[in-house]
Image: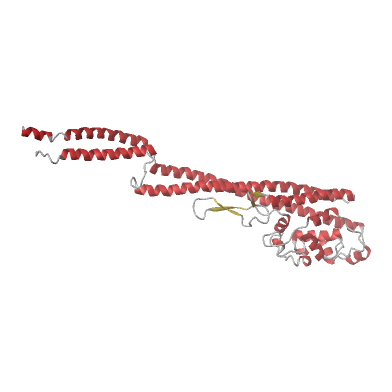
Length: 389
């Protein structure tokens, strides 16, 4: 074997191996100190790309859960308000049942009317004031399509929370869902206008209003557009007058020939011979039996209206409950996905401490050996000096 002084190949090999093992040790130190197997793209380029995609999914799912919980909060706020509306309407219906007795004095009816009016106004106030932050969620500002909730991590993964419009006019409009009777022509089509048509007739009967157009104006207001189904909607004009509804509860049928009831009203009532005897009624006034019949019609109309309001509010509450359950299920699903995707990312990204500490120990031993061997290799050129002696 040749003996060289200028080039110490053994020392160079020792340096190379020492550099390699030191690099591996530095990598182990980085992985153990950071807890991540991949600290830069050079550690695992493909693994880094996969883990970044999984990280995107995890952060998206976590934010989606927060969004879904916001949606649940909106539904809970709306449902809580609607619960109070239901309580009020139930009490209003009770007052109507009580007002069905003709034995009540005018003072008794006035007391009933005061509470009835207050409850109607309170329900409108609840609908107008219920909000999530500054966003109104139960009046005309609430979108008919509901509030979109981004409940998933990817595009197209949305749910909705439909709080609806709980204002009095909107609830009557929902009772007339699908009714195409135009608001401008409603007085000529009361028999086909659903509950609101019956309310207008009852008002005309109780208030002694022979002009059905004026009766419609009193109940719905003169400024109204769209159809009965649109009443109270985003694009419709028209309100349900609280005073008119109260008048149906508080007022009594006028037994006077001055009450020129339209034949339309008599035909709509379809009770006894009232429609056929309308001419006699105009000239002589109502009989006591006819007054009972008309009073019963007004009471029945209000009872049906209150029952319809309860039904519409309950429909909104049921829908909100279903949407809350759906979002809650989505939160659970997202949470399970976060756990599983995090587990997948962990297998790619996280340091296996058992394996890495074993590797570090091995490299430390090799480093010590390399250092010792390099020290000895550096002494090899000294052997050439013995040849010069």
